[in-house]
Image 1 (cartoon, rainbow, N blue to C red):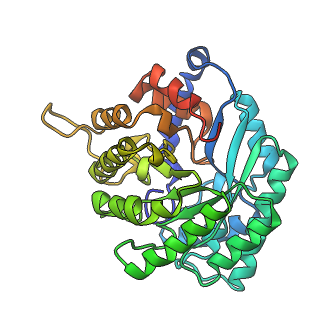
Image 2 (image 1 turned 90 degrees about the vertical axis):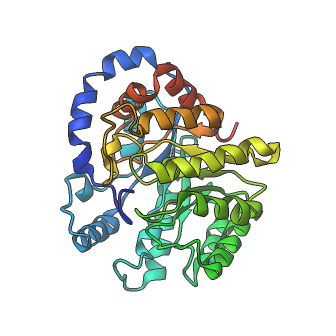
Image 3 (image 1 turned 30 degrees about the vertical axis):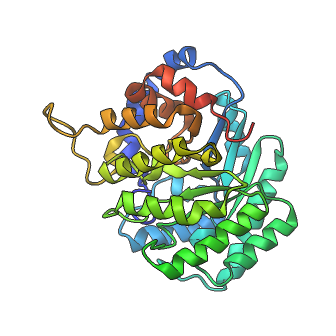
Amino acid sequence: MLNQYFISLNKLTIAVLFFSVCTISLRAQVKQGNYTDYHVHLQDSATVVLNDKMLKAIHQAPTKMDSLVLDADTITGRLDRAKFHSAFILSNAYLFGSPLVPVANEYDEVKKQNDWIAVQAERYPDRLKPFLSVNPLKPYALKEIQRCVNSKRFYGLKLHFANSEVNLMSKAQVKQLQKVFAIANKNHLVMLVHFRSGQKWDGLANTRILLHQLMPYAKNTKVIIAHMAGWGGYDKPMDAALGAISTYLHQNSSHHNLYLEVSAVFPLSLNEDYKPAKRKTDWDAVVALKKRVAQIGTEHIAFGTDWPLIDIEPYIGLLTQALGAATVQQILNTRVLK
């Protein structure tokens, strides 16, 4: 997300209006099939109330979407309209463990959120894959993951390093995260990780820790890095992170359990430091991203929207303008689990 907690929907308004014009032609360009949106948020009434408090804490105004309850029927309706089959639906439990806004009876609320997302998935079990979530630094983190594993209701685990204020330069925190990765690995939970934790963020240093100190604890499951290792837009720290990930993926076939997904990369203005290239000598975010996509290979890049940030067809429009229809089709075809 754009800052440590949210990407604002307001910055997408102009882009969505513009690219909605493109959706008729895009339907013809993008083959309809068994596609998955790998990054989707639902929200119950408790999350709506908490989101309002968090937005106020970071001096952002809530949008209309922030005030809506979004359940399983909401998401399957949008999947049907876009001719998509399935989605990874992510629990908001980690928000209830965020340091930003204290929550009364925190662990009880975390459990309620994880249970709620499981109930939503049970309404469409062949289409919705539920991910529990937790602030991995909390004393109850391992206990909650194990509780959810024991229920046999969950497909994966969502971690949000920014919202949870994870600092990979802390040896103690890395040690705790190793335990979290290990329990997910032991129980074959697919992991979706919002990896970037700050605007002023050393992409290379943090990625080296991820690859060499955390990924060894997840050899028997899949790990998906959200937002192409960013939190909105595309910048040089992300580019450095993707360079390291590209090298890692091609070093050894045992590393092929690592994926990325493309949600919230476009429009590039989602990153508050974004400056469009004006001269040929300027660093160009789109050119750099296309180079990294080619290096990594689309077989390791999945499609996601970060909905309700943006819907499927407008986001395919944004991706197509930047990366080209052929590359977007390949990303849509990527299956994290065969």
